[in-house]
Image 1 (tube, chains in turn brown, blue):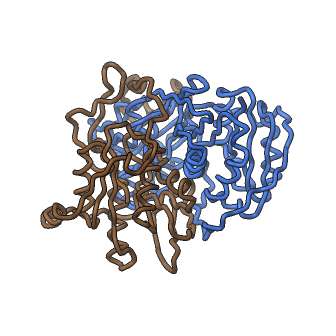
Image 2 (image 1 turned 180 degrees about the horizontal axis):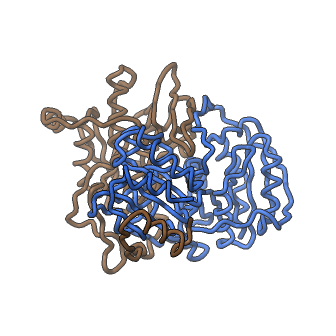
Image 3 (image 1 turned 90 degrees about the vertical axis):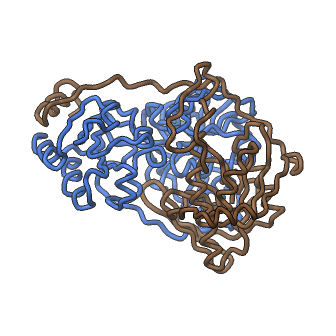
Amino acid sequence: MAVKRVVDYNVKVRVKSDHSGVDIANVKMSMNPFDEIAIEEAVRLKEAGIASEIVAVSAGPAQCQETLRTALAIGADKAILVETDVELQPLAVAKILKALCEKEQAQIVLLGKQAIDDDSNQTGQMLASLMDIPQGTFASKVVVADGKVSVTREVDGGLETVQLSLPAVVTTDLRLNEPRYVTLPNIMKAKKKPLDIINPEDLSVDITPRLKTIKVEEPPKRSAGIMVADVAALVDKLKNEAKVI
Amino acid sequence: MAALVIAEHDNHVLKGATLNTIAAATQCSSEVDVLVAGSGVDAVAQLVSQIPGVRKVIQIDVPYLADQLAEPLAAQILSIAKNYTHLLAPATANGKNVMPRVAAKLDVAQFSDITKVVSEDTFERPIYAGNAIATVQSSDPIKVITVRTTGFDPVALTGGSADIEKMTAQADGGKSSFVGRELNQSDRPELTSARIIVSGGRGLGSSEKYQELIAPLADKLGAALGASRAAVDAGYVPNDYQVGQTGKIVAPDLYIAVGISGAIQHLAGMKDSKVIVAINKDPDAPIFSVADYGLVADLFTAVPELTKAIS
C-alpha cells in the first residue's frame, strides 16, 4: 500500500506571493487521509487472515519516513521509502509503485483515491494501467474471496460493485472504514520495524515531471453578501433582486 | 490537431456533463470528435451527431462496454488515441476512473479537473480543494484531460449533423466484471445539473428532520437535494448527496445551504454557485462568508416558513 505526505487537512494553505506555488514551509504535514483509510483496510485484511504481509511505500523527501512510521504503527510490516527531492507527479509515482509491486509480488495494492494537495486522482488508475491489471476505484467496501476481489464503488448516483481478478489495484473512498487511533505501544513497536530507503535510480524508472506549473493563484473571492432579517426579506431578495425563484 | 471527447451516458441517455466537456474541447481544437462507447447506443450516437461543432461521432457498440468498466473502455479509447492531440472526458466518477488508465498507457501526464483552457497546452485547475488555482502546461504529444463541468457552459444539443462512424471493438481482457449497481431512485433533478439545490447539514440533527424540512423545500423549488459531508457521515442521507471537494462539485443558479457550517471542503464544492443562501443559527459560521444572502435563524422554524412563503 502507498502513502503520501501532504499538508494536514486542517491547514488553510496560502499561495506564495511570487505565485510559484503554495507555502508549505513550517506547516503541519500528515499522511494523506485517504491513504490512512488504505492502510487501515490493509491491516483489516491481514487481521482477517487474507493478507500475509503489508508493505507500506512512499516516495518523496526524507521526511516521508515519518509518514511511513505512522503506517508501520497502524500495522504495516515493513516500509520502503523511494527518496528523492524531485517533484513527483502521478505518472512518476505510478512507475515507482509498479517497480516495487513487481519486486514485492503484491496481490492487492491499496491507495487513497486522491491526495488532498494536488487533488489529481490518478496514481492508482495509472498504476493499474501500467501493470495491465484491473482496478476498483473509490471503494466503499472490499471483499476478497476465491482469488478475486469484489469492490463496491462510490459512483455518481449511488454504488456499483465490480469483481476483479488478482493482482488488482483498489483506491479508497472516505466511507470504506474508520482508521484506528495509533497507540503509544504501537508507535514504539513501529520504530523497530524495517524501513528501507532506496533511490528512484535503483528502480530504473524515469520520474521527470511532465507538467510544468506556470503559476499558482488565489481563487477569485466572492464579494461579501448581505444578511437578511427574516424569511420574508429573504424571499423578497430572491424574487426581486437575484431573480432566481 | 483534433480533440476526442468521451461521451458519458448510460447506454440510453446522454449525460449533460458531456456537453460541458465538448465546450472545453472546442477551445482546444476546432476539430472535435466524440466517442460513444457502450452497448446498444444507437440513440445516444444519433443524439450526439446533432450537437453543433462535432465533426464525427465514433460509435463502438459491444455488450462488454455496457457498464463502462475502466479496463475495456480504456482499451477502446487507446485504439484511436493516436489520431488526436487532446482526449477529454468529464471529471465524473466514470471519467476519473478511466482517463488516467489511458494517460499512463500513452506515457503522458493527465490534467485533472480543468476549469479553464488557457491555450492548447496550458490549463487551469484547482488544487488544495480549490484554495488555489494552478496554471499547468505540458509538452506531451497528447493531452489527456478531465473537465470540471462547472467551468464550462454546455454546448447546444441540436443544430449539427455529424457523421456516425461505427468501429469494431477491442477485445475485453476479462480481468474485471460487473456485479451490480444500487442507484438511488429519485424524481428530482440530478445534483450536478440542477438549476437549484437545497443542501442540508449537521444542523438538521437527524435523517427524519432532513426529510421533513429539506425535501419539501426542494419539492417546492423543483430543486435537487444535497448535503454536507458531516450530514452524509452522520447517515442522514446517502453518500451521493455529498457536495464538496470529495463529493460533487456543483454550480447551480441558486444554492441554499441549511444548517451547514461551511467547512473548507464543502465550500470547495459549491462556491461557484451563482446565488448562495445560507441559513444557520451561528452568526460566525464560515458559510456566511460566501453567501449572497445570509439568514441567522433557527432552521427548524425558518425552513418551514420559507417553504410556505414560496408560492
